[in-house]
Length: 112
Image (cartoon, rainbow, N blue to C red; front, side, top):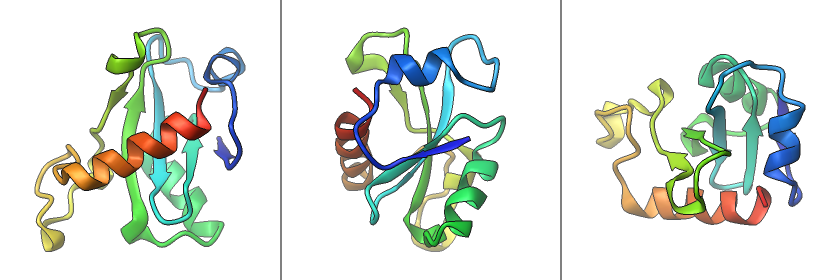
């Protein structure tokens, strides 16, 4: 697991990953601090890592990134940690288009 705060090569992260998923990396994006945690078996582990580093759970959203796909098909905004009925997100998918837009902007900036 690692936290990405500066632009980093997605292909380098993929090559040295600890998890052995064949197609994806699990990621959690902090939409307030503009950073992303990558490479764990579960999104909840990445969420916990960011919370331990000072992130607030309300700012954390999970997704999967598929490094071998084309840029427009790389991100899947789905994770169990996204189920938040109290704020209207009753699905594993990030339903708010503004949140998805912020997540995508952070990923575009940090994962080259």
